[in-house]
Picture 1 (tube, rainbow, N blue to C red):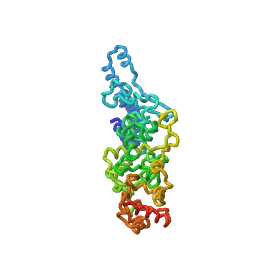
Picture 2 (picture 1 turned 90 degrees about the horizontal axis):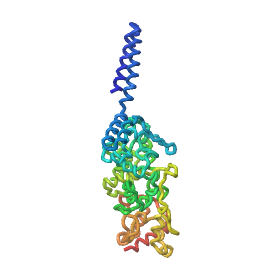
Picture 3 (picture 1 turned 90 degrees about the vertical axis):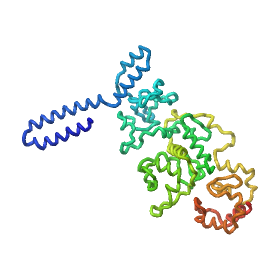
Picture 4 (picture 1 turned 180 degrees about the vertical axis):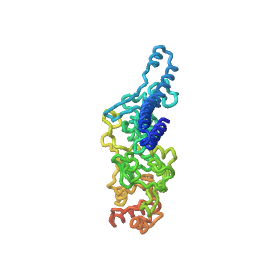
Length: 417
């Protein structure tokens, strides 16, 4: 409302200048003077009608209603109405969120409506030290809701997360969340999606069989280590949005890609887009959202060490233990060197990333347990020489094997009946 009045005053002054400049300049100067007084008054009115002032008054009234101690009630009545701020130079945090969210650390407000509701995480986190935007994002220095949440602020790269996305921020302090088996209350979406990437999915495939994540994995798919850092135009510049339903956003692209990879990244010669080789895992809506939250959390750690939480037991390993999923697979064979040449090549060439034999290996490609009863040697060699003839979701890659090596692998597979 105040903004509209200001615009009206400016319009009147422009019209007044046009009409009165040559007719009555004294009247024009009087108009300018009144306008300046009006604008000064509106500035004061805007300051004293600010949202945060209204919320602080309402909070104090609610807090008095909860209190029975006369001294506490008297203190509340004398509480000054002012901008409240958390400042932490180490984290680069300047947050005024608590100017409105005053009940964030008051358990008496656990059932209160927003913006007064008690934040349960205040039991484990010192918000007076770390602020709010470190987890929720947003524009911490703002004092109005629209600007603070920053969801519709042009060129602001870090809008406030919706409540079902806040767990994106957990791993920046709790790095153990990326380690199998670790659990953290309040980060269930992160841990459940981490387990999915570790093979707890319908195809029993680890994502690092194709992708590199945090420096571990393969290069058949894009490196996801810094997926969460791409924002706005950066993401649009490397991803085709044509097939995304609804708003063309990073979230929608990622979520829909988890739901149906081939739909979001199909074969499109016009755009020089090749169909993705990522199989459809049949993720539920809940799983697709959790995975989206998880990959959004893939960012380069940049917090001071003292803000990182470490469980020393998570970093202790037994002698000779390795985190390599490749070594985990190879350990299933007591003596690899004693295996037939073709089987050794099958293992060392990582064919098992996609194919299973006797229950060991990946689920992306066909099960080869009895492949020798389905194909002859000529057909097997044709697959290697013409990868494009493979079934849907075949990787279509060229194998760095000579004719003799391919012959050895073919002999091994032909024996599987």
